Length: 395
Image (tube, rainbow, N blue to C red; front, side, top):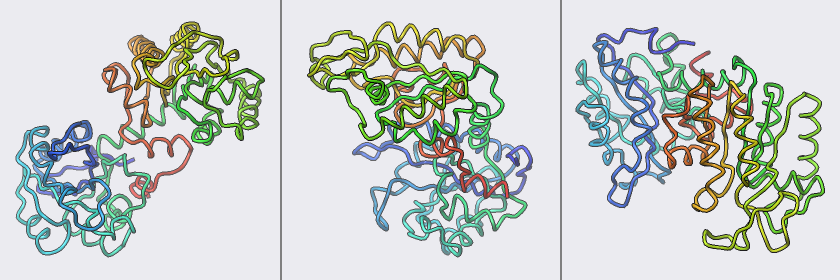
């Protein structure tokens, strides 16, 4: 696996695919700089070697050229985070881009305009990729968030750098973190899968079951498992057409000696809002007109004990509707348990949309081993798929 450390960038132009698809407010100000901060080490290494950086990224889902999706809006923020002046060019290909790249001196950074202003980017167009490739000497992919897309700048471009291509520090770390869970992790290995639907997690479960000792199932998909086993779930969310699948998962887990842990009690409510009445009930005895929105105190204690005996932990998906304070306790307490296990030497990887949002909201990002920067890419990796952006560097 070739990384940044295999190259010296002295007098070289590093063409770096970054993921600056960052959230902007109505004044086009960046509201979360995580993705910019995460590629800072890669940028600094190339500059300190005596090279220069040409950064390419997409932002949003523009239809052609749309001013609100211009990367010019984020130049100041990138400068603040990296601590180096950033030049900007209002296209990513063509004369203007070539000239700006040619004029770039050692120690300088150039940010190209939004790649997706050209439809050829998403189409994986070869000649578009070739035009981009002419801007730099060494291709660096540091955009895990788009590594599952076979786009021009994430995958196709690599063929124009047969020997001069590598992973940036961020992407290398993402690959290593997933390998720790999937291949090299110290046992016992625990996966915590939350969220609403069994159907969205089934491929992951099938792929990782062989690697696990424990599987905690939480969130809305709990109730599909409980109902499938004959429990009363009241008005809780349930995928009735996935109940046989849930039973099959339990059967497979038993055959593979994986212990599956479901909540034993829940915080039930009579309406889907934060201020509704609540009661703690057994997970399989939820009264009609009530629905479970968080796991209860006994479940929290059980899950804590399982987390504390685990050496490798994957967390994907919250245990309840954490967006409402009254139903966030299960998710927050789980975060505290994982933080404690991590402090005691366990390796913990958090990834996939809502669990990352929860980790940020409740301040756990520095208390776990690694927080993945790519939702879809992370999930596809866990499903056992080879991501095209990663394969392009390895080939």
